[in-house]
Amino acid sequence: MTQSMFSREISSEGRFLRQGNRFTHRVTADGSSGFPVEPGRYHLIASPACPWSHRVIITRRLLGLEDAIGLSVVDPVWGEDGWVFATPDGRDPATGLTGVAEAYRANDPRHGGRSTLPLLYDAKSERIVSNDFRRIPLDLATEWTEFHAADAPQLYPRELRAEVDSLSELIYNDLADGVYRCGLATTEDAYQDAYEQLFSRLDWLQMVASVRRYLLEPDRITDVDIQLFVVLVRFDAVYHDLFRCDRQRLTDFPLLWAYARDLFQLPHFGDTVDFAEIQRHYHHTYQWLSSTGTVPAEPDRADWLTAHGREDMPQMPQ
View (cartoon, rainbow, N blue to C red):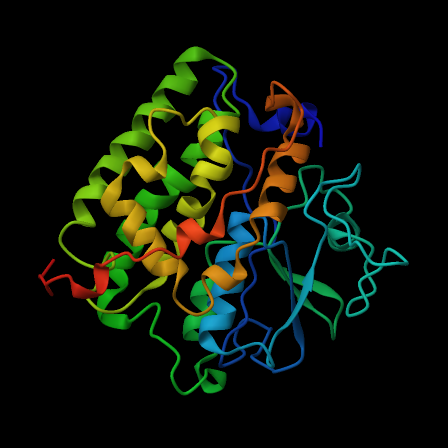
């Protein structure tokens, strides 16, 4: 990818303003959306290196939807045509696509922006259902309940939806999108605003991590824990240096660092993390941000597997 790919998303003040989602249909249990829940019909196209994809990959695994919804993984490095498949013939055997841009052009020939992931694809009609990275995991949690594993967690519980939605906005605006607004800012004012907002939110989350094990519940994860995890697991590996989010590392926030390790050690969190792929994605795809053009050594997984001590936290209320 070249810097020009983001040019239409940079304001006149030098601020990164992420493009909107082009496809926002939904798969619904009652079929009212035109895309009914149907095991084997839909396919998730994603990259574990991409945080937005990673959130959906973890959600799919936690809910036990692997047999109901297929998964195709793209190469972590963008090519001239964006996300492509690293198969011997260059095609995804499940969908027949050569890349994400091909699907976008087939569904919207006028689309001129970036072809983003994750992508929920209807293999029956060969149509894109959605690239709405914020809505897809919530629908997996609420519309596909008939096919959830017996021990699947309630990631978007009805009684907590207002709290989940509110915290989700903070995590998205200040952290998940905030790191990109730091890294892709082209003016000092734009960078400083995003930088201060980012670290103010991390300071606040360090305080939250001092009073309960997970963000909204003392003893169970919700969707917002997944959202925060995919940011934190990339922070020291890429965001701190490459995106100039360099006031502190994650490891300098002792309670957040313990919280991140706690999640990493849960099933379907750490085993979906590939630090080498993450670093390849960022340092090659955003290579103009690198002063050396080299990919640094990946983080030591052993550090993420050290004791975190959070299972002994007192069960304090919100």
